[in-house]
Structures are given as C-alpha cells and as structure tokens.
Length: 271
Image (tube, rainbow, N blue to C red; front, side, top):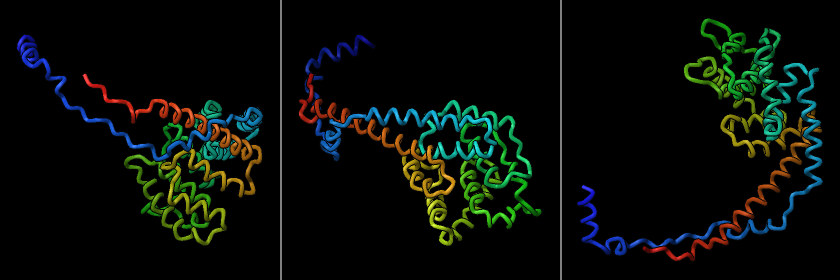
C-alpha cells in the first residue's frame, strides 16, 4: 500500500504547490496600544515592603492559638473573600484541618457559624455531612424552623452553604429554597450594608463568583462593617493595588510582544 501511495504522489509532483491557502487576515485587537501605556509602570518597592509587613501581621492573627473556632472561621472567610487567601494557603489548610478533626457541632452553635463551618470545610475538600443542619428543622415534613427567619446573617450563611450541595442532599435543596424565598422578601427592608450584601449574594452566590471580581466587591462591603479588622482591610487594599500593578506590567509586555510579531503583515508561507 505504501508503494501505491508513493506512486500516486510521484504522478502529481506539483500537488502540494497547487494547494490554495487562504491568506491570514487578522483583525486588529480591540484594545489597540492601550496597554503599552503601562510601559513606564514600575512595581512600587516600598509598597511591596509594606505589604510583606502587613502579611506577617495577618498571619500572626490567623495562627493565634487564643482564637476560638468561630473567630478563626470568620477570619478565614474574610481572608478568602478579600482575595488574599493565596498568601496563607498552608495556614488556612492547617486551621480547617484542626477544626474538621476537633470541632463539635453542638446545640450551642448558631445557624451562621454552623453554615459557615460547613461551607469552608466543603470548599476545602473535606467530607462533611449536611446532617448537621437537622437540628434547625422541625415537624414530620422536616422544614426549617420559622424562628430562623429573624436571623438574617444565619439565613445568608445557610444560603451560601447550600450552593455546595451534591446529588440527593435534600436538606440543602430545602435550605436553598427556604433562604432564597425569605431573603428575597426582606432584602429591601434591611440596613444599607446588609441589604447590599444580601442583594449581591442573591444575584451572584460566592460559589459562582470570580475570586478577583468578588474581592473588589467585598472590599467595598467589608470596610462598612463595624467589626472589620483594620489591619486586614489595609493589607487587602494594598495587595489588590500591588497585584494590579503586576498585571498591568504583564499586559504591557504581552502587547509589546504581539506588536513586535506583526502577525497581520507576515506573508503566508507557501511551499
């Protein structure tokens, strides 16, 4: 068979040369030379140093052995939402590992803490059962207690946790329907910061968000909280700005590389 193929090719010596190849006609990029304006942008070394110092402070807070599990969960959640968790991956893993092994989900836990713990552990890949929410249900039809309706923070926490449900987790299916219905009905009657957060979560649950986009949004919400950690807030803002400078520099380099290639004007190679 190989002899036949060779013979066939030998009979058509110009077959390759006769192939008509379409000319490349690349449209110009929609951004043009915009990113080349960042050519003179330099990453601020003083800013980098300040960020490193704040990072160490946040790390000390995170690993503070005096913190109870619920405080650690809140801090881990804020760090992740603010988009700086990539600095503390090992520390967060160790904290959640200890909580998973040692934390008991007793009747003293409120809905907010239970749901937050469930979400953070499941996000991290731990096999946690949704049965921990059974204590918040009542009646033969297993509906969530009406008394939970006044706990807006708990409902919001449960709503976010319910988005990590897997197949046949009926409790979380019920939780999603229960929290969505009631959060929708009260979102306009809440105080401004909480109302804004509830409305945003109903439109864009954490599970379906993009980390950097959500971090930018959460920065605007976090500073309005009376309980916010000032060191963490400053660190998150500066880290966001520093990372933005790095991305701008990278975009400039990529744009210059593409411009130097001059792909649009390269003649199509013909054999």
